[in-house]
Image (tube, rainbow over all chains, first blue to last red; front, side):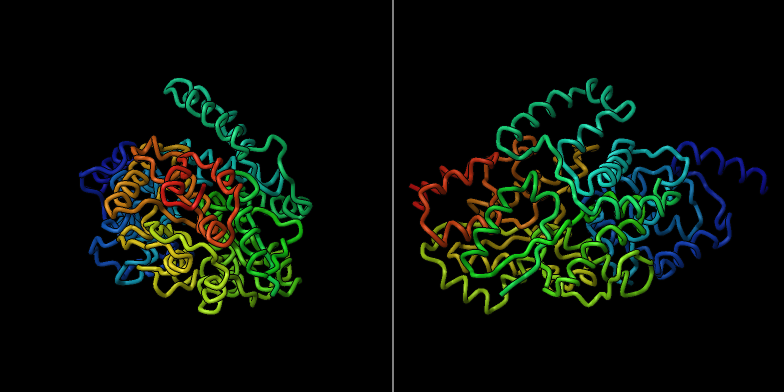
Length: 212
Length: 279
């Protein structure tokens, strides 16, 4: 019996969340305990009222809805969450956390999962968004501040980004927008640097293992 | 009166019109803004998405610099304010170690809330020489400024009033609506244009339904989403002002005022001419 359930679990991992039955607590309370401990969110208090999902402005675009995220954590279905689009689509607008009647920090949990996914080898479902965040931090490390033009330039130079943008025609639009922004004096070709860049680089160096 | 000022990256680039109007308004109010020396980026959404540790450490340097100055810090950008406060709260709780000396008792003001204090409103009303009467606006606060209330300290996070008070102080007519704090999509447009367009589109549509002539914002990212991407989101040309631009307009008659609005993508000059605020 356990063997059959195990294979079912394996299949659903690849196809994302599914309606097939999965073992409850296949990892004990390991995930629940860990995330509760690391974020301080009282996930166990959730009674699935779906207030978070109803408040969320982006829940329509999520494959695992916010209230389901909490349930998945309770059940220990970590892989499904890591492969979901939810963790990348989440806007961190904190609607869910603010309106939860049990004060479950839903946005904090999703952010924690996103941090974990960023450091895992699982390819993110929303690749563009994940790569953009990483590029942002790289630019910050380089100049201490972020220049929009250099940021977009560095983002476009990441593998496959430019190719995909040319394919779906957004590059043309982006260049036109960039030109218009430059005409209005909103873009600067020379990035402004902070003199404290050495200290910022030290932070990155100290925590290298944790950041990238 | 002196305040230390943390502008943030947006105000050097995309939102330089916001920066100019802030400097002009504070000058007229007689408050000196001292820009933090060698300030660095707060990390914005990217830092906390990838590593909470970075989200606490990156703003900490600015907190340390501001504490050394010994003045209250004011932040005009909603996201910067949120990240600075978040970092401060986490340092107070001793959750992360930061390489700088931060005691955590610095007073960080959100710019609209600072200006919406009763004394400041009184001062603003005195400075207004040309009330913007007849201009119907809705105020849009966005998410980072008010939420989570435990970090930002807003008690009226469901129906914030700071921008409303400021808009009324300069004589504008404020329309009420229920989308004050609904997210505009933030930086998600980089990867998922469809989500950003639907969220922004809904805001624009609802703003129009209230019968407003313009939207008043205080967040640089909200302004660019609502203004620059307005046509993509199916908007109908409703101007999006920073609240400081309206204040600047109301404070002093200026023949060059139409130049300030050249950087807007949705041109507000026809509206302002029609209402008689520009010649």
